[in-house]
Image (cartoon, rainbow, N blue to C red; front, side, top):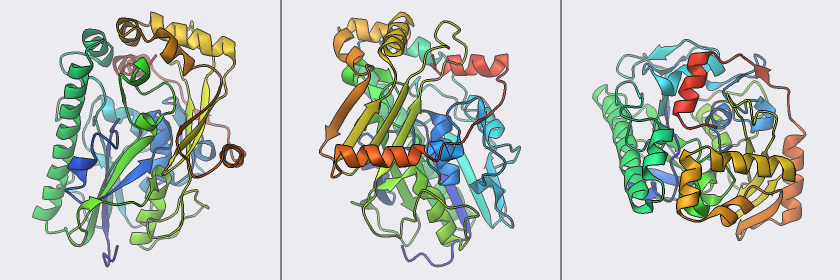
Length: 391
């Protein structure tokens, strides 16, 4: 990038922002890469965004997990002020628990050198339904929103695009804050996302379902005075954030990383990991659904590893759940959406790697699986997750 000395990094993570629905806006701000998300679930992807490791290697698959103490993250760099945004509410409390930190700061006040991380509603349901100060849902929760708009693809698309625009506007405010503080030359701002969002494709809404391009491909945009705006062809991954940041601030990782810096050339393959988690649903808590997939710039190979019993039970639970099931029934996509949950293999697009290569890459990645550290979710946390629309 040729940026010179970088002292500060702003990492702004818009929730559920699809590459194809955001690239035109973001590429006006800086070079924008199509990016392979680490998971379809926020906590798992955040684990990769802040450690540079694939999901099996850091062990965070759900909100009930805590980053193991032996794994360092961007929030634990000596000599650098590291903090999450000082925003409160639904979008932030869980991140503090998962990453074992109480550090909060406003972008106006955090002192250089710093790494400042913000979790933003982005394109998360209810689309365009969050308070800008607290990031709490305002008039309705995600379940209520999906139930209200079920079957109305045009309305869903319009609301989603408005939510993404608002997210990009909040990122622009961060850019302006850095400029006003006189820190533009020594600060790199990054906009990215944890996963995409389904807006009716395959008869489905939301993101905790199946691996597909609409959920796996997200944007990453770099903003700095020396960087020219535009869409770039280089493929990026969630796991490449940490090595890129460490490269720019001239630090070394304490552990081997799965990602590589943006500046390293060569083809990239991305691993996406998803495990269905039922936080407060006793009926489905005994069922398991694992989806492992491998992606490059051409497409992806997807392997649904759950058994038929579990797949069918989870899909029937989705239908009976109300808000998302209502959309499937209204759009008459029962069979087509149901097939996505069945065990087996599916290919999207035209990947440059073979099915065999993808399978081997996934197996090598899974070999590094560690046992997750688990924390108990209190009733308030479970209520918040239910409001966000998780089963």
